[in-house]
Image 1: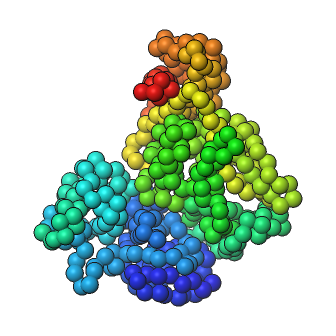
Image 2: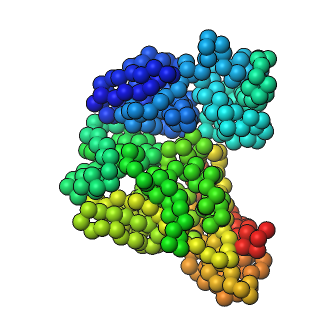
Image 3: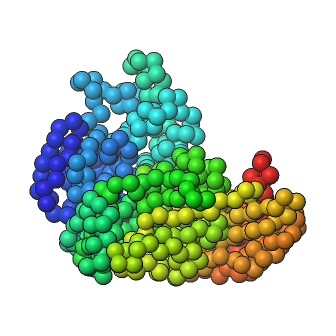
Length: 158
Length: 290
């Protein structure tokens, strides 16, 4: 079946089998490999993308369900050639170790700070509670998201 | 793993959806949030020949206060319940359970009606509906609308009274004048099934006597377990710590948990007792406006 999806601002039309998972559509059809596959059982959250602005686990949604929707992946975070504050903050505050969970953490973090300009540590931990970091590097992930919130609020980059 | 191939249908009106179910309901699974169904299809525990995606049906995503109850429609997501002022005012048992469902990302897609229709025996929402006296509304083309109390709708694990030609369109939450509820959940980590869950609900009459009580447990029986004996000791009495302890003891004896990676049966029984006591105290505090 033909589907048209807005991916990071560009419309893409593809013919897909209904059972094609959204994560595989993004990685293999669109070639956007920043979205990762982890557990493949809806547990780890590394495949998280934003669908119409809300985080969803793309291993647990069929590509056909995204027909007519907008998707944002980690590749779409950059704005006008500049790093998004969440990307800048992860760099500044050492928010990643191996980097496997990072795209999802940044997307969830960006969604959080859009709705909460100064999240507390508890609020950040709550927001990322559907995402696992296999390095257990949560302390710096939380710091990075809070730093990104500050940077966004100040309209500056650290 | 990949699901088996299926036909994908995406009706755009409820009539169209009910027509599909009337004609080929036996081979159709309904896709709402998909957060239980898709994992089961990927494991090939479920391989429906046809998947009917209801996400494009209009006017099916509201929570509203109508005709003396609160209606929660089929496309209401768990996070809509978390954020709903209507729910937080109308039913504190539901409001306190909502943030415990799965994890924040799954809550963006998963639906409460889907959870009830799926009826995983370790799901949280079924216990809530059993405790608060909720009803489930199903519709079919030829049978029209049918309203079933949750106690009858939830037949057994993964089994409900919903017919292949029917679709769950809403759940109904009864209202009360003075009351409160609570949901206690022990989980190893966010997103895991409950080790033990307990839904409690109390209503008080003008003199402060308990006029209605609901207690239902998660993950300590082969399905969600309502405990009428524990409810019965509460009704007609004044709330007290001793009374709540008695209800907790009855619930502890009524459940039949198993030893597993989440804990021993004995441990879970003790948690049931403690959760029922705590949940009733919390429910009373809400009822008294705390």
